[in-house]
Image 1 (cartoon, rainbow over the protein chains, first blue to last red):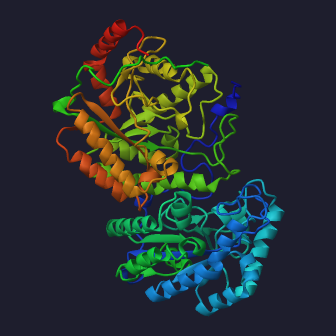
Image 2: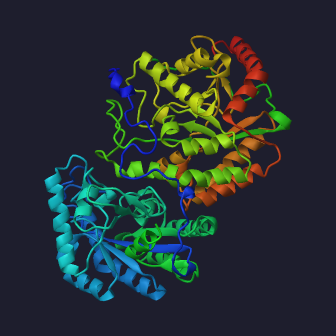
Length: 308
Length: 317
């Protein structure tokens, strides 16, 4: 077996706190309790990924999870993702309206360019829209040239701002993947909060070269894609897990203060006819709960920031 | 490379000398929370890639960091509630990074054992001298921060060499004599302790640390639901409790704060802990206490039973 250089036993970052300088090391239990408006216990953040997976996927530096997996043309995956934007999303809208849920839409700019009808619907609904990057194949990654990534971010944000007429202050990268520069570029381009760092259950301050961002806690482990497509659980199992999470967070909020329940969902996953009832079951439970504050990501970030 | 690691004899799971745990318990039950630090930019190792994406690999890094920021306290509260002291499989660099967590565990008299320096530094490719230095660093770090003489080892990210168990035992002896370096969690061949044959002949045992009950194996490899995981924990316990009447067994739940403490998973885990600790003949203990008890009471009789059977059947395995 080839041997390792002795540098392998050197640990230059082995000291108090994190092994980088992006945020402070703190344990949730030691932080000041947060209070949500009207004494609510759980801020419910339902985030809908509106995604465009190009048929001619380049897959640099990796194939995006959920993207094309077969040789070109992978009509199977392309069209099944497209299903979400044609059919599933309209089931979502109905469900949100029936249960009085305030969603947040995370949209690929390329999808907004391609689907003016859907953009028009979103504008009428007036729900918050955040940028999900240019498209699902335009990844941000370590080793990407700074100028190239900067152009990618600017194009994505300018395009989405023009098409939606919204300020767009939130961001989630495709695959929640970043380069070492992504936060700096986002902060320089009018982003206030982002959802890529799934390392907390509450918002926290994230340092960049261009001012702080707020890192927002959007659980990957509880998202529909992870549970249904990655873990191969049923939609009913997804609903069970969300309900167990609700019960636990309510209990923890009695001593720990307000909590955030971030549900990242996708119309091509939960918008299927056999799955939508389980989203409805969860939304029904949440909408009827007196301790739940259904709101958008921007409102949660602001309410948190105002208490720091 | 060898066909067989050579650490133990084949020793069939029937007609073994009876083990009885303290107070007549049938099952020795221990929980082993892995408290780990994964680096954002670990160095390359030619034998194993730390992360699937180029650094910064957010999906994996942020999930582990969540375990320390949020998950640890949640699991600790549960273990407090059911009177369980954790036996920590520790990335020892965490003593430097997150001393608050170490203090909380010290206050509770939890056991600390070595799980290397970082879980992103693998044993693969280390020379014997390098591996010895890494192991020594980890044992010294535990002593410096906790005052404990490290008794057990689980290789970082389960990355081993042919020397791993020998080196751990020898470094333990070098630093603290027989008080350190006497059990391993790296072998998964049995539900009872096994004497391990090492090159310097130290009294050393393998203590069952179940990969099957490991939350990361359940959630990331088997990809089971939380409620199914809770059910499997109870099923595992039921059988070991039944068999423990004949001869004491061991049940271990190895956990990771970033898996088991998620809001949608912790309820199922709690139900299993409540169920297991609700039984009368359970010794709720730590890895080190099991290893020590076995060494003091059953190590010699076990060796002699193995020897007798070997003589009767020729080579046992």
